[in-house]
Length: 162
Length: 318
Image 1 (cartoon, rainbow over the protein chains, first blue to last red):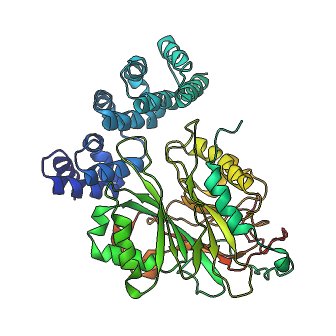
Image 2 (image 1 turned 45 degrees about the horizontal axis):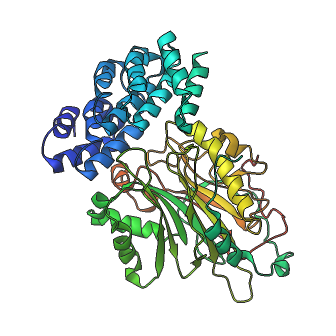
Image 3 (image 1 turned 135 degrees about the vertical axis):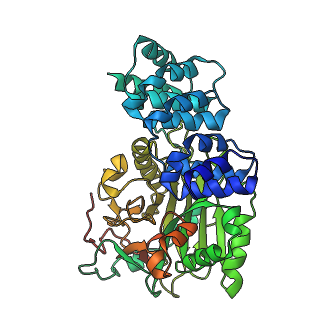
């Protein structure tokens, strides 16, 4: 399967074709890299097989291309599983993901951000490893959380800011 | 205070049943040390004998889509039957009929295999389950000994699933009992999770001082040189060293980890089961089965106690 066929299938309404494309991506990192945005969307798919193969593809994909950053930032506002993967991929960009910091801070400060997305955003900031005072303030606030994972990830991210 | 807490009651009750018998008779009956065996070999599974073969297999996205592929299921079934017990990672199906249906295939030739399935775990709508598949002709499950590690600090994405077993040995022989810790780490949090797994390993060991054979196995998403706190446990040993475990043969992600000074039953034989060469598959076909190869290690069916090391394999202990 080529990249354009995979992207078209993942974005389409045909469930068997979405399944086939997601599975193909999970077996081919190059295909995953090309289809990273539709794969993030498919992590919230109504169909379990599409969701699971998309998750598997993204788990093994490594960092995305830097030029995917704006699209991934847009997906941080998507439903939970899609946002979780968009944030994870932004974190994998490490210092190349610095332009995503405002969006990640927004996630941390928004009261309705799902906990797992919030925690992944804290992890991602630590991976990016830089940030201004607004980033530091958001992390310091999160470090006071009663959720032990949230608190620990915020403290860890603060340490990585230096 | 420990960050990880065990659900102890059923666990301890089960292990007492496993290890509460007289072990003094076998103190002097240690196996011969294997000579010059490589720590890891890439082969087909070893021949059966007075040993059991313990394996770990990450079956990528094991669910309905694989069940619908008879050729894939035929290979998976043959793989499992090459061993006595297999720790499986990545059962991904909300429908809970996958393992019962697979057991029907495994048992179709008259063998009697059983399975233990852990709870669905994961941070998103994507969930995974751990599974132990075991041949009831060679392995007994220690009743009520299985549990999932309690992780109140939320250190681990998919908390390990633990269970204890007993090899079926010849009459009059003290059977080898052992506790398996089944794990699939989060690839983005390997460092944190390997540190936590060091604590998991020690907590499981301390929870039952009568059981000295604790074996952690699964997809660690890193090789044995990056085990963090797990690798700093004195005497800890990784059965897979320097051999890729993924189907593309580029990464060593999976391992079987234990302390040989306690687990003297280890024969020194361990390896990666190369499905491509064993079944003459193309890489593409092997990837239909999984993106990982199974890994395995062989142990005596006879319990050895007293702390002697049966094998100091060529690989490094720490």
